[in-house]
Length: 158
View 1 (cartoon, rainbow, N blue to C red):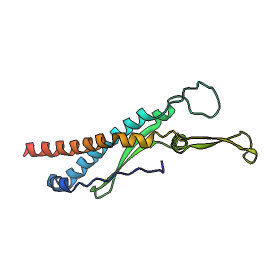
View 2: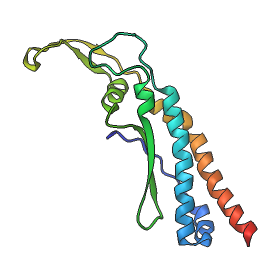
View 3: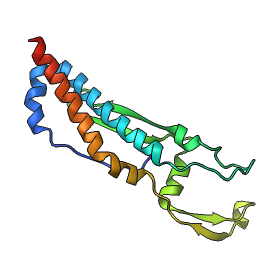
View 4: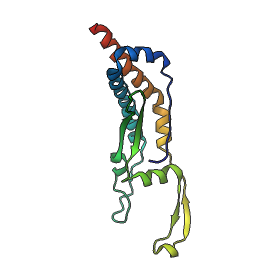
């Protein structure tokens, strides 16, 4: 989704330990740690995502469970591997529905675009931002645990 929630971490205390692992290994560990944090956010978002329950057939509405099933994530690393980004959220298949839920939307009549009228407004039913807020500390813990385990494993092999 184009809407971003960001979280920046000060890893100054881990930088020396990561450097000691070597550049290639440090990049690998950082990606693993970001993946661990991303999985926490992904699971929280899936749990918080609403599911259609009206049972209405036809139309252009998403089938039940489609939004939850479409939530994914990936980790993007800079070529230098000293920084990465975790992206979590619905793909293009359902991102418009997630945006409607997060921000609310107008309810319009059907028909040709020029003849449509606004007949109401659906209020926001936020699930992504609250999921992020609820999972932030758990994700941070997973991130740090992954890095500390890698450092401990490297220390025990020396």
